[in-house]
Every structure is written in C-alpha cells, then in structure tokens.
Image 1 (cartoon, rainbow, N blue to C red):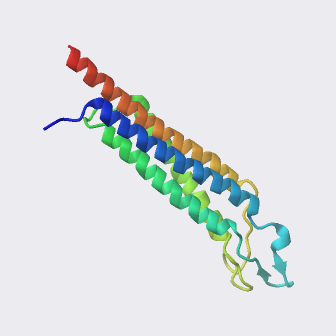
Image 2: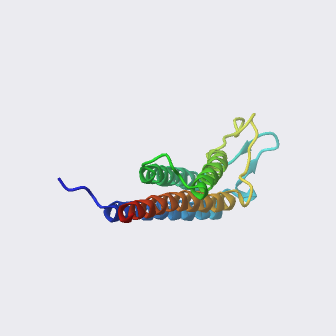
Image 3: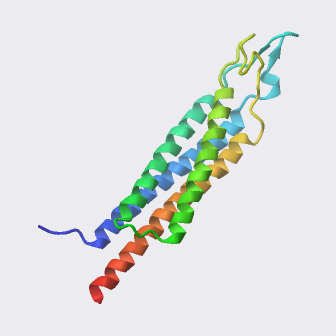
Length: 175
C-alpha cells in the first residue's frame, strides 16, 4: 500500500485552485456582460400611473454569475480545509478566508438584488410595491470586483495553507 506523497497532494490542490480561479474569472466576465446589457431608462414604459420594464438579458447572466461564483467558492473552501489536515491554519490564511466570506456575502446580496430587478416588471406589479426599479449603473461592475476579491482571497488562503503544511511535513521528515 503506497501512501501518496505530499507533492502529489499539492499538485491536486493546485489543479482545484486553477479550476476555482477559472470559474471565478467566468463569473467576473458574466458580471461585466450583465452590466453592459442591463435595462436602461429608455426601456422603462410609463403610462402616467403604472410602469412596465421588460426582462433584461442581465437576468440570465446574473443567475449564471451566482452559480459559477457559488461553485468556485465551494471548491476554494474545500481545498482550504482539505489542505489543512491538522488544526493549525496560518494566521494569513485565516484573514484571507474571512475576507473571502465577507466579500462573497456582499457580492451575493448585490447580485441577487440586481438579478431580481432584471426580471420583467409588469404594469401594476413592478418589483416592489407596484413600482418599477432599474439596476443602478455600476452594481454589476462592483459585484465583479467583489467576485475577484472573493476568488482571489479564498484561493490564496487555500494555497498558503497547503504551502504551510507541505513545508512542515518536509521539515519534520528531515529532522
């Protein structure tokens, strides 16, 4: 029975970090695309009393952004905890992990609200209390920046944790 070497385990972590980074980049691209195709004031129809806003293509892009962001964040968290076999996690990894969750939470809230507003808002129903709402310019772009911060910090946390444990194992074997 052959025990996998730390080098093989480290390579697997790198592969999953690359997958997470790729999904995060796709999520970023979806955010930017959603910003470009969101509803503008010219799309709003007003009959003097009631408003109507058609479904924006940013609705589908917002959902795609949320899905890819969730998957990338799950992979990043899994790799961080997988690479931290012992209870010792370096302080830098803890800080990066906290930043990733904070930015993830804010990004998800912004994306859910903006995506929800991008659905069709019919006469008399609107988005909230019968009123139509437009997604403010920069909402999706701000979310894109938070997506990059989320994915970068969770993957940096996973990488620093795996480096910390790889270095400790090498030193323990030599000493």
